[in-house]
Image 1 (cartoon, rainbow over the protein chains, first blue to last red):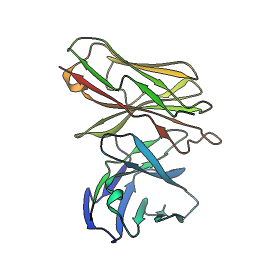
Image 2 (cartoon, each protein chain N blue to C red):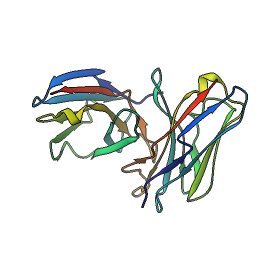
Image 3 (tube, one colour):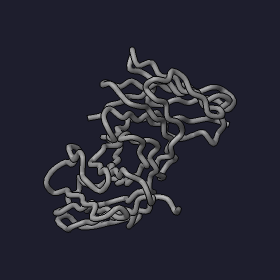
Image 4 (tube, chains in turn brown, red):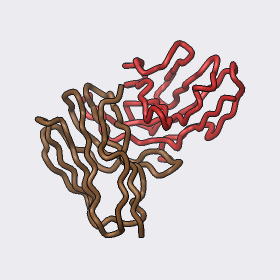
Length: 110
Length: 116
């Protein structure tokens, strides 16, 4: 069964706007990761946040983690058409297991 | 390193045939994962290995599916006999691990399987 659920399922914005995607999960975790998938390609790791961290930045990406609410958000600032892709959160509930959510399909229109 | 290498990239087979998917993980990575991706079910974890040992195969759909990792540089996922509902993209991924936990996972390009 899926551990994470992303919200929204699909998001369409204009270039230059910010995009926010949310992820909720069910069990306690060691870390939470965000990945990106371009159509027809494998997933690419974006950022990892550990369970004892609350916020992390990488370039135009900002990730927050609220373990009390079992939720995380990914913010992409100043979006570009090239950011168009599917975005997935993945959790590590125990040991090495890595479970993905259903993903958010982001479309950035030029 | 060339990254995670999967073969074949595309496979079309007839129902009832045996299918073998192959994966070469990144050298030095402790974890290897097999996933299946479909529109209906998303990205499902089938099985994962730690240091060549299968740790959790609870995602393997049924006995027709089997996976092996005979050494640190090679893994196979076998479907026998294949059925049309097995049609999907199968991904292999590897992760270096850190004190018993996985970290960043690196994905192969996937094998698109079509069973007719």
